[in-house]
Length: 415
Image (cartoon, rainbow, N blue to C red; front, top):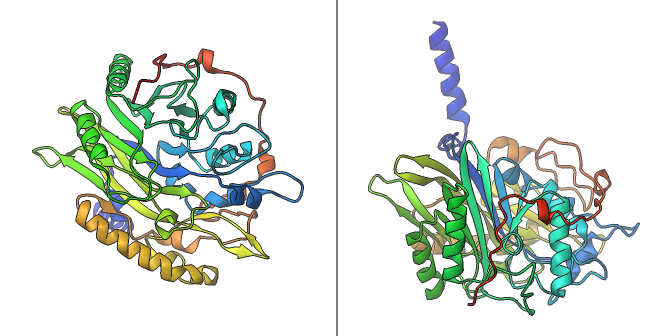
């Protein structure tokens, strides 16, 4: 009888859990990626506080669970941290507090290979890398060229490449990984020699504002698959693009290519640039090799409410409309959210039928959202006390590159 009661209890718990959670392999290394972290002038002014400091914590309170519920979470950091004077497009330099806030939100892998990393020249790129080192956050794409992440006994390498740079690239450190198949092959060999069981390749590529990936993206994705890459995560187009899945004879996923996750946060105005993706997947090892474990994506919206004449920026999950159905402040956005998400769902149904969209959030996520005013971001979603920028000041920036493990000295190739 006791065993029967226990079985009923376990069955009830499993029935109440969301299907996307039950399907995950607990032995897999779980990853989460989002798209371009942009920082336009309006965003910098929005984060400025009365005392002259900057606070970005509220921007990410509604998605931090996505990042903290995985082993590794990555973003394309499409800005520099060169210090004041801060600036937006076309030459980005953001307050250091932005990097601190996104790290506090759970992002622990920063991708640096993009066309804006040299916006403030070699000195700005070096300052940016030094900041990331001082935060002890993993990063790759410039220096180091690649990293190897380990969890559950599985070693996963992350490679990162950009199609080009808007400014002259330093021929010495820090360098920049440009898309070059010879360079990629060199890095694949290096990470394999360092014990990598699986490889994720993050590509800054494609045509801006086009939801269909270019022929070049498709052909290079095929080359990466044949080269032994497990997953490709794309950035740069600033709009979502399709996701390709390849399965083996047993129906197991052996390759995933998300051509573009769109923007994570920005001030770009077009609805397609305000709707991005969060992508989550696991990597597990089988006798046949690494496999992708239950990938899913979720739509996010860059919400910009105006309070007392001041615009604020928040990344909001919108796949499940029950999350915000009683939030009157977002009502003006609802028609454009509804139209945009329908357009993108039709597009994904046509181009990406093999990947699951996370459309229904657990009850606790829906009920515990707190839509407070910026910057008083009390994240009751995560059931934690509010985080303020005063909890951790920016530590002295030190150059920690010399002691970093798993560092590649590979130089950038030619595009």
